[in-house]
Image 1 (tube, rainbow, N blue to C red):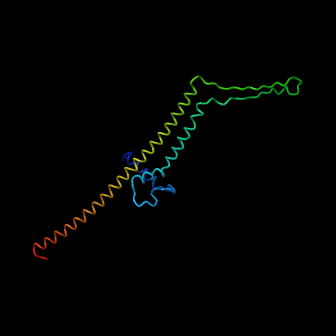
Image 2 (cartoon, rainbow, N blue to C red):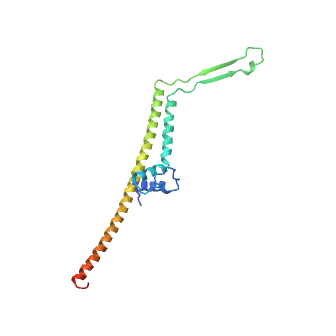
Image 3 (cartoon, rainbow, N blue to C red):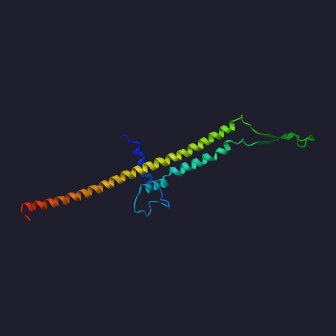
Length: 178
């Protein structure tokens, strides 16, 4: 059995809506008398755990841009020749300060790469939101279609029953069975 990606996304939307993910205080479905596509999309967005996860990943990627373009921390070291302590000679010790200097353009390239990663993380969040909105809207459209079809069938059935009753009455009048 092959499952289409649309079916899979719709199933994921349903799982996110009804699978024990707690509703938020500002849940758009609470107290709503009429379900609309917009309300459904908002509810799915609020309940989908992928949205805050990707939002956090995008924020983390954005926070890595500035450090990527900065120099590494300088190194300070202290050395001591222990045998010169108390030997009557001058204490042999030293301080070293060093700084790694990358090749020209390396820091700018690191910063550009980090900016690109942050942009990609933001686009992944946008992509997820669009996929969720598309799946929720398609699910709402199917739900709406089915409910309208059921209502139309019920109305057609009522009209057919009324037509049958009128036909039986008219048929009885024509044959004199009134």
